[in-house]
Amino acid sequence: MLKTSETILGVFPAAVIFDMDGLLFDSEALYRDAILAAAGELGHAFTVADFLKLVGRPWATNRLAIQEHIGPAYDVEEFRAAWLRHCQLMRATLALKTGAVELLDRLDELGIPRAICTSSSRDDVEHNLQLHALTGRFDAIVAAGDYARGKPAPDPFLRAAEMLGVPPAECLALEDSYNGVRAAAAAGMHTIMVPDLLPATDEIRPLCRSIAADLHGVRTLLG
Image (cartoon, rainbow, N blue to C red; front, side, top):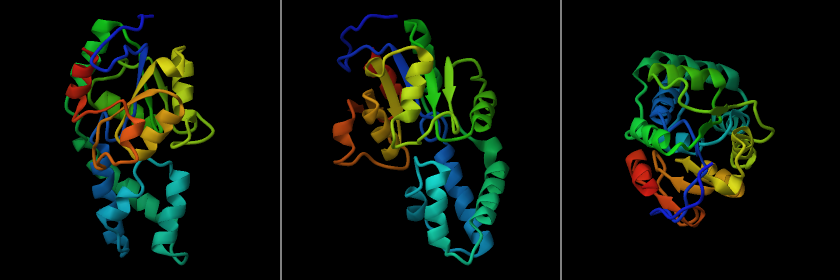
C-alpha cells in the first residue's frame, strides 16, 4: 500500500471509490431523457426539475417519491417498467465521461486500487463496463443489494472500503450527486465532487476536499 504523501489535494489516497451514474458514465442524462419519455407516454406531467430530485437515491426511496408525484390511482411499477424500457432503447448510446480512461490509467501507474460504488444494479454496472471495454479495471464492485442502507447512508462506501481492505479514512471518493457526497463524507472519506446535472451548493462544498470540473481535473489533483 502506498504511503501518504503530499499532492495538490494534500493527501495521497490508498484507494479510490468511484460512483457510476453521472460520474463514470453519462447515464444520469440518459435516465432523465428516458423518464421524460416514459411520463409522456403514460400521460404524466414530469419535468427535469422533478427528475433532479431523484438523482443519487435508491429505487426504494424514489419509488415513494414517484408514487406521490403521479398519484395513488396510478401504478408506479408500470411507470418504472416504461422508464426502464426507454432506458434500454437508449442504452447503446451511453457515453463515457471525459477523462475516465486517463484517470484509470494514472491509477494503474500509481498502483492505487479502486472500486465502483453505486445504487444501480450489478447487471447495469457490468453492461456499462463491457460497453466501454472497462471490464477488469476495477478491483471491486458494490451495487444495489450489497449493503443495508443506500446513499446518503455511508453503508455503500464502507462496504467498498471493506472489500478493498483499506480504511475509509484513507479512501478518496468521487461523486456527482448530493446524496453520494453526503454518503462518502459520512463514511469518513476524502471526497471530490465532479458535478454532472447538479451543481455544488453551499451545503455540499464543505463536505468535499475539492470540486473538479471533470475526471481530468481529478487526475491533475492526484499529481
